[in-house]
Amino acid sequence: MTPTTFPEMNKLWAADQKPYLPLPAYSDGRETISCWHLTWRERLYLLLTGKLWLRQLNFGEPLQAQAPSVEDPFK
Image (tube, rainbow, N blue to C red):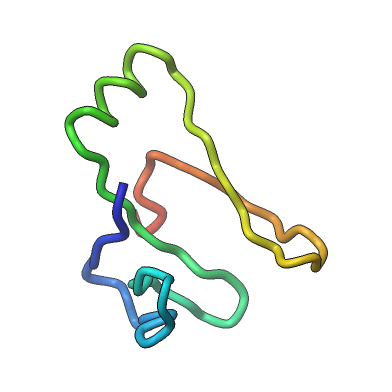
């Protein structure tokens, strides 16, 4: 699974921060939206299991709200 660009993106998080992947995103100060591309293997696994794991790195800070979705939030 890799982050991918999309027409509404207006920010690139972690552009020069190794070991992190650059994260193309839309951000308005209230929320940040990113788009992820799944490989064929990941798509098949998701189809068969119905499970999507979400790992959040909060570095000891309070957990932030998350809202995974398969629907385009810009439509």
